[in-house]
Length: 266
Ligand SMILES: Nc1ncnc2c1ncn2[C@@H]1O[C@H](COP(=O)(O)OP(=O)(O)O)[C@@H](O)[C@H]1O
Ligand SMILES: [Mg+2]
Image (cartoon, rainbow, N blue to C red; front, top):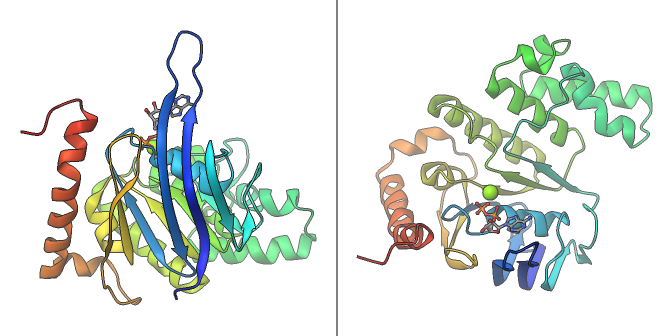
């Protein structure tokens, strides 16, 4: 469990000055080890650099300083094989059926038709989408569409899954159920998961460890071990220690959120 899967060393990211605007120091410098097989949650005030952090781990953005490795290799310039990303916005292709959406990556990778068939069917079964295989995204609810996006990432069998507020647009009940599915996927795949969320209860419920970020430029002000068993689901929200954990996250985050809003500490 303690084997390092991805590592950030002295990583910072500054968005260079553009037409009449100052440069933005968005992230870091920070260090982070993601352990192989863990579920790592990230919370932080709005605009603190969470998406920037995800982009840097995924190789979608280069750090301005520092180094990122995944499975001991430097991440640079492109998303490494073995990393899958799920974004907040619905990134499904509206002109493709659910089945073709999920098959997209495998086809692009040039996989044999029989293998595509088998893996897509399996991913659809896992995400409860079999009955919707021939539907188009516009015919589905928001929760279903986000499941399509997860299936599309899952079908590539990533060893590290990065999710950027994937349930942000869903209602509270759907969010809880999607959380359970994510836990099921995490257990079944053995993948390492990094989940960015603005929902403290979601982070508290799903994570082995929760990294709490400061206001911009984002760094980790604390990393909290939740102590949950691997076999867990949303029912832990009823446990007393869950309330204590959520309260602790909130007290850490409160001052940072006020800073992000430009207020002084009261
Ligand atoms: N492409 C960009 N160019 C300039 N500034 C950016 C860009 N992307 C993000 N930022 C700025 O960097 C900071 C962190 O952004 P982001 O990582 O999206 O935060 P979060 O996901 O925590 O809300 C914000 O102040 C944002 O305005
Ligand atoms: Mg973001």
